[in-house]
Length: 125
Image 1 (cartoon, rainbow, N blue to C red):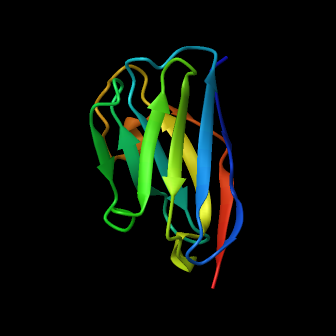
Image 2 (cartoon, rainbow, N blue to C red):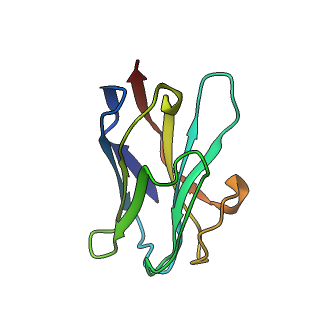
Image 3 (tube, rainbow, N blue to C red):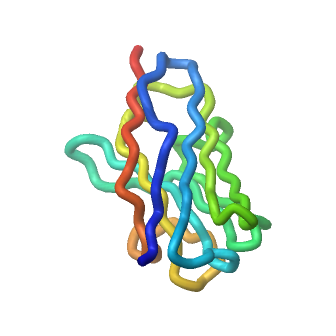
């Protein structure tokens, strides 16, 4: 059974930092793109960042460019999202996702086949 498990969420003050982790099990994602999405209360799920299977290419949502950094460790079958200069509008449930086989780090929710259960990030003003 394939599982993605996020960790690292929590409560932080504006301007602070958090590092989210995504641990994959059940299969390896060596060639699969991994991504992070978020969903705030009452809003649609939003693309945050994605990274190619080989880690060579990344994409970011406009609202997080320059503040967030996505990375992965294929040896550990894990992905990460470093979030700096956090703002109250970053408050959301953050989800890790992975594509079935494509290494292309796309931005569409429907492109991703596996999802974690989400981790809450709350940024206070």
